[in-house]
Amino acid sequence: MKQLLKTTLATAVAATLASAAWADLTVGVSVPLTGPASGLGIPMANGVKMWPATVGGEKLNVIILDDATDPTKGVQNARRFVNQDKVDVIVGSGATPVAIPMADVAIESGTPHLALSPIGLPPGKDAWSFRMPQSNGVMAEAMVEHMKKQGVKSVGFLGYTDAYGEQWLQALTPLLEKAGIKLAGVERFARSDTTVTGQALKLASANPDAMVVVASGSGAAMPQLGLIERGYKGKFYQTHAAATRDLMRVGGKAVEGTFVTTGPVVVAEQLPDSHPSKALGVKFNAEYEKIYGAGTRNQFGAHSYDAYLLLDKLVPVAAKKGKPGTPEFRAALKAALEDAPAMPVTHGIIDFTATDHWGFKTGSGVVMKVVNGDWKLEQ
Image 1 (cartoon, rainbow, N blue to C red):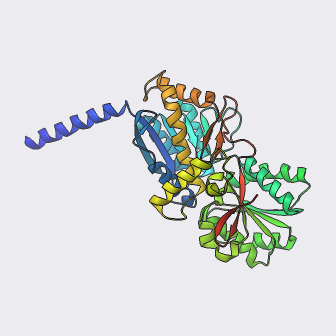
Image 2: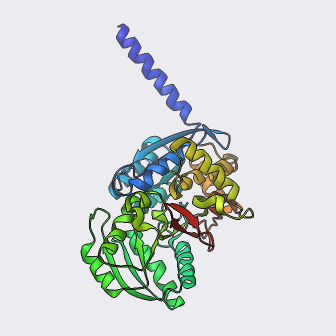
């Protein structure tokens, strides 16, 4: 009888707590803590763990799940968020192929979705999805402008077979054509591949002035090392998915001199004082490295922290039209994201509109160079 009473009381308390949670702002975060994109997902989760206990005056309830770099798992997580956890916001995934189908769940459920990867979606498919990273087009423009300054006349492309690689190629190709830079060869590889011997041989034999490697985290070093092993001696460019020290940790001295596109936060201290994100970036880097260790700053943790900065500003706006946990609040938050004036975050000025859910505009990407095992901003 006593055991039954204890069980009944425990159930009653749990029900009361669950009821109280409806008043909280609930955020579901799905990131790749395992799998090929874990080098992105782990720092993204770290950035979320830096969020305070309240956001925009509302008590914060955060649920972090691993999507294992698997689109099916990402969709399962998203459906759990909206059906079981009744979240107000979906955040993730950090892997482009995972975040794309999550956008469908956001539309179906009418839930704002802050994607942590630069997902390309057909018109209308991003109605409830807002991208936290810079678009591949923004980064490709920064890359091509730098190539022009370096006198590059031809490039080879070695990228993922998935959506991230394909969307980068689509963004880069017209910019290269406009700049008069020849695309000398295109090769692909899977995220799970451990070698690119065949692809590297083909591209190295073409001997372009530069190679563009489209990969992520520690996995970005492998294709570059493969090209070097096949005798390639030209310039290397990596994308913002490689803007982590894992590139240097795995690649060692072989990646010295590599150019990497990134958001300004990674080199915040080197930005001019007039840059709108310098103070925010310096502050974020100091706090992140205090928790996770010197030199751990990265592109990805800052994306998830920028999501907090947005919510902290816009949740009070949405709360005027509905309480967290209601469809009215979610619709109001979507409208607030679209209507808010441009605001500085760690990665630059973010400015969503009703017709443009890419927050960062041309000029927000920067190029940095690996110099003596550290990042140096290219001017």
